[in-house]
Image (cartoon, rainbow, N blue to C red):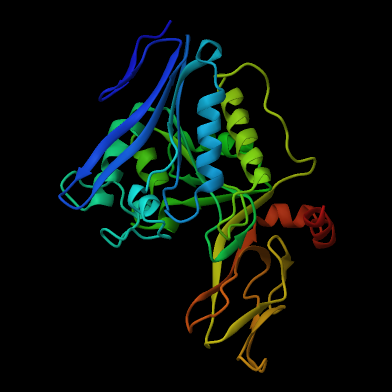
Amino acid sequence: MLGAAKIRNIEANAGEKTSGYLRVYESPSYVADVPLGIVNGYRNGPTLCLTAGIHGGPMHSTAEAIVRTYESIDPKKLSGILFTVPYVDVPSHDFSSSQKSPIDGSSVSYSFPGNPNGTVNQIIAYTLLNEIIVRSSFHVDLQSGNTDEMLIDYTVYCKTGNQLDNTKAHLANAYGTEAILLTTASDLGDDGQLVVEASKHGVASIVASVGIGMDRKDEKDISTHLTGIENVMKYLRMLEGTPKPRLSKPKLELQQAYVVNSKNQGRFDSKVQCGSVVSTGEPIGRIENSAGKMLEEIFAPVDGVVHAISVKKAINEGEKLVIIHRLFENWMNHYVKEWIDRFLED
């Protein structure tokens, strides 16, 4: 049997669960409390942390999936410990702000490893990493598309060159999304992302993004996240049973991203859908003025899969239109383009 699991004043004995708030920031004008749930299993096992709302903006489906997971787990049937943080970027949640905090103009997602004496989001990042993540063996950050974009469902793991890489790949595969995106620390650069910082502390961390975005709370998206969480917990043997395969066909394995930006101001008319397989030079959309006259035709810069599409009604010069990811060459050689298109239409 496990002993008590405690973070500050939030404590759960073996076979129990509890929740509360961690006070991370306080000023005369604003107070930030990070929500935390602890489910302490009756049997020994690994520690898993689930987070959501790290980007601010849309967090309806992700937060709901984490709350439902916390509520549904019976600690007497759990092996190990589960930490749940349904929303990380507390200021953006409190002020219904997308992407950046109205308090310090930054995003928690790019603030790691954080600073205990810094801005509110730097303090949140520091607290999450040093008081919760480092006490975990595994971490899944739940995300979805933003308010101004559509996305395919995908998981991300960052290859950091240590013994955690295989574990992260298995976690991403267990989650069961239609695409897996492999990145490296050099791809992400020095932009303060949690998946990189967690790995430095020996924590296998992945991102699981489900939902096309546009600020929706969708039961299908929630269900997909719930199945992914359950699969990961079964893979880690925190729950009894085997992971449920969500797809009957092989996953798309994606690599380097190419962002297509607008060279003109106007309205973007996309000619492709999320998940479409495109070839270099293929027309994928156009920028039009208010009268419908074409100002610019947009072409695919590489062969790959359309990962994200902007749904903004008005596009400014230099703004993101489409993100395309290359497929791993061995995958592309094995499955012909026509078969992939049929798979994505299913």
